[in-house]
Image (cartoon, rainbow, N blue to C red; front, side, top):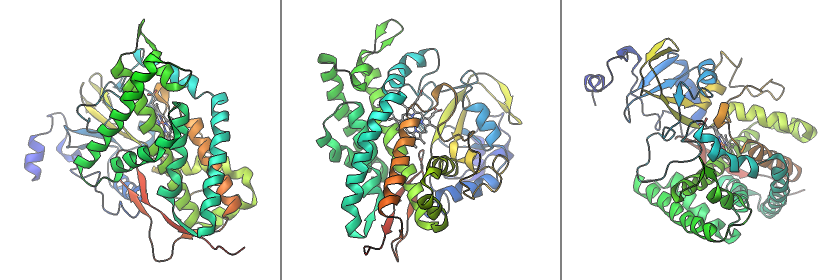
Length: 405
Ligand code: HEM
């Protein structure tokens, strides 16, 4: 489309100079390093700019503005606003697609199921599984980290949270894989529908025979004095799956890629494993992954531009962690950096309820892997491949290590 046609389609209050027609899911260099691709775009763009696709979105380009927008549901609503673009024919993803006070009803079962005490139980199981997987991989001297390791931990934890059969793990991993790497939109959509069909069956069963797992809590949750509908329960269950699978697998793969290519940093953690929790926070800051949509609730000025009610905003969490104005030398990873304001898990009412579970899974991975495979790198002659999209990820991470003691 030529620029004249693009400009003709944008709202009158958007200054033409702020319109950048870029394919955000096809950025130059994104397969080699998707964070560097975003960083280049950030450095060459104003604080707020307008993306004229899917009906048009303001891209919030600065950390300070992102920190302001993430928690502010009164000005920036999440109501059916999260997916970019929306996926037709699927239920609202709850609680992420709802605003307070309704949001609070949907959020309650998650807070209970992922309390610090519950996380300790799951962490013990995740550690046992991590050890089992690494012990099986170690003698091979190589693996494709994403498929062989990163997807297994979060999927197993999800199945435990909702008390679904562990033997369904491979089937769901396959569906999730198709959703990310499915090549065509049709393949991705079919995988999404397949996942909903699988969960739907279980939502029905739990209604008839509830237990004390998260899925049972979700089907029984009270929303403004009534029990959740089938669609609400399905939408919330799917979000726990999607919200907890790709995000953990993606972050874990970025962490593994970083350690594979930075022997000095790796050595610091091998020598002093007490640094690992701080290292995970810094790596989360440097490799934040999700982008969330929001809807503007009233006309206002924000970030030096005029917003109108109904405008859409894109909150790209990776841009927070990469912004030099908030993080000096932002591309550099420094395990001693003060990171408590990073936006990898968001902020405000929607702040990730799975954050402590995710941290535990990441910590367990690094601890157990480095104990068993302290030296590793990208397999010779091969390359890691990163993935663009609403949740950044890693498509392929071929690793190799010495097998001799
Ligand atoms: C490294 C891993 C993870 C990252 C980077 C991540 C990131 C995020 C972010 C940024 C949000 C806020 C969304 C917003 O403001 O609109 C969020 C919300 C959410 N996350 Fe996570 N997440 C991770 C792991 C998990 C896990 C393990 C689970 C569950 C098992 C989970 C479930 C959810 C749910 C249900 C929400 C919606 C919360 C609400 O709307 O109140 N996430 N996550």
